[in-house]
Image (cartoon, rainbow, N blue to C red; front, side, top):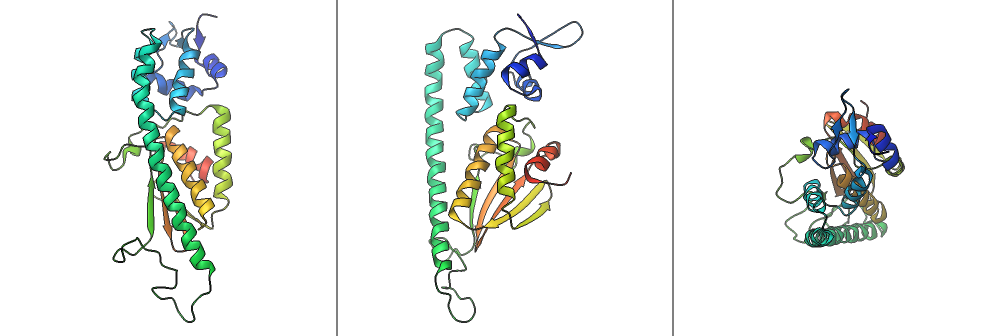
Length: 259
């Protein structure tokens, strides 16, 4: 078969039709139109999608993948590799930074956990009882806030509002991701629906904090329209999730938000 309809390409590649349409809009996956208006893809579409998926697995931005595809279309692998090397190096640096942030966050949680597990003072809480965490400077008391984002620093305050509501995960991957979120959400001790999303409260443990942080970061890599904030307060973790109105069905599937 020399050409494929969108349903055929979705079945063969495992990429949802909604994502294929998004890729076309983003300039990643060209499609012709039949006389009746149906999308029609060339014989190289499956291989092209594999390259796009590989770039997403590496955490590359869509604009970088689009540039790489332009180089790839010229048919010189060495040129593609030369363009990819600095991009992958940037992702390594970003992953190392995020890993250091998560390690520091986990260490802080472990320290708070040790303090809270020890003998409690007699009477009410005080500045040294361990119920109130603070930064290293004594003048900066309060909860520890960690913001998880794969977006470049200095980006607009709410870029998620402008991001296309399209997930780049395939059917099986999407099902697995949904199951991961649902398993975590069941551990929440409190849930509060807020404007544009939901706020979930969890027990404060290093293991759970690391799991929430890692899953939120992975979710932003494939769904840039989600916005996550994970904060540590005395004896609890709070995960705030926001998304545009067009993503209400995904909020409901992943987090049980009423739509």
